[in-house]
Image (cartoon, rainbow, N blue to C red; front, side, top):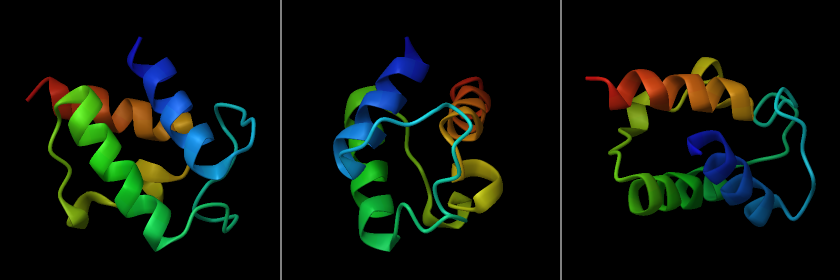
Length: 76
């Protein structure tokens, strides 16, 4: 469920179909403006707070990486 929500949010922002491991930040597909929009959507739809210091390639560079990051965060 969470992964589908993440995928729908990202695809809605970039207007493109993406694979779960497609590079987002390192490829330049998403920029700082889209990242802010992404964080706002995550906070609203998944009720998780994301600090800007947590926005790294390790956490945000693909749908799978973002999903794993948010799963860890939701368990805290």
